[in-house]
Amino acid sequence: MKRGLERKFIIVGALWNLITAFLTMFSYNSWFNQEGAKQIENVDTNTMIAGSQMINNISQIIFLYGLFILIGAIINFLIATKIRDNDIQNKLMIWFIIWAVTQLLAMDVIGFVLYMLAIVLYFSKNKAIRLTNKNLDESYGKKNFA
View 1: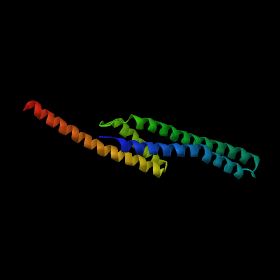
View 2 (view 1 turned 90 degrees about the vertical axis):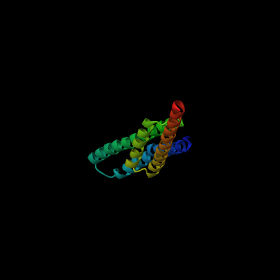
View 3 (view 1 turned 90 degrees about the horizontal axis):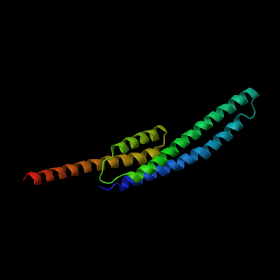
View 4 (view 1 turned 180 degrees about the vertical axis):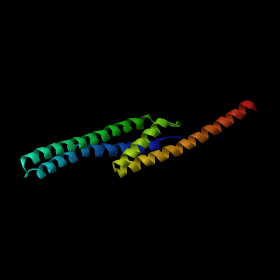
């Protein structure tokens, strides 16, 4: 069975992850730093130092989250190109389930839906491949022993 539709969903999901990663790393991170700086402008020195360190730490976490999603998007692009037709690749399924759960935990509903559609299609085609292989094995066995 051809895996074209799964590839498309995975590539679209990876593109979505790529877009959200860049938005997180650059737009949201910059916005967070600017708003944080505005909030600590009119406070005493000790509070300003503690607040700027806290803003810096949170900003680093935001950047690391964006980097994590970016790396996941690159991995998914690579995996989408490596999916083989008429083959059941269990390790891919484990990766996509882990990534879909990660998307759900990050509250990325669009990414979660895209990867879940790919997973459902992959599982359904796996069943069809198993049934086809079973029928081929049975028919091949009958020809050899008849």
